[in-house]
Length: 297
Image 1 (cartoon, helix red, strand yellow):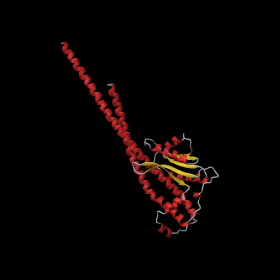
Image 2 (cartoon, one colour):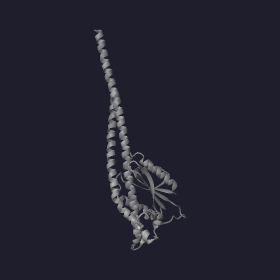
Image 3 (cartoon, helix red, strand yellow):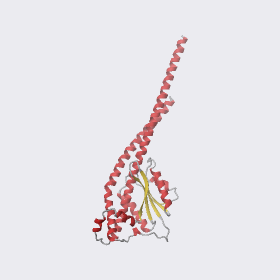
Image 4 (cartoon, one colour):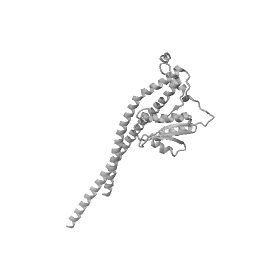
């Protein structure tokens, strides 16, 4: 009976775990849909800002901007990596992949400085040999434009002040529901050659015909657009990382639910066998006792 009681307790614990994993799967599914919908709604706005920057470069020619500055090799060169991790676990290898990608990036950078987003990353990198400059956390909620603006303003202020000479962002890109890969993206200083190459993909004939007058100057308008552009890049990365996290958690909870169901089936089979063995033993004892009593009579 003691064995049966232990098996029943284990089965109850597995059922409770199964309820939690299925609930987390449903929650992550809803959050994933919301995140992807918001990203699709806001993406055209930031694409328009990016095209406006292309228009300035195409129409004004050379633009003087601190966001194009060349590194001063007479001073020590520092590189910043903005690392986007999660605030909660139970997401499979989501955070571990980010940590490996960050470590690989830091090996390529000169004097890397980390700016962390997410509690999991903060707890991990606090024990690493890399310098942690700042940490942000959204408490597992969907990042907003205000969150992206706060981070963008901080990065731009530190960059212009000279704390670091370049900025990369490491996040998880969601190619599909089953293909999630950590990537690093260079965001500062702005690569003019890359921007001009991307400009060639647009309708160049139409843009050559367009000529705008920028007040007070093309440089001033361009410098005003860059913070908006950086905010859009960071916001897009944050939301895509959030959607990737939910997708990874869905997959992890789905696997956990399958494992729990298999364990429950195994425990149920074991329970039935132990219960049947106990019944058989009791019947055998009754028959043996009855036979013994009958023989004594």
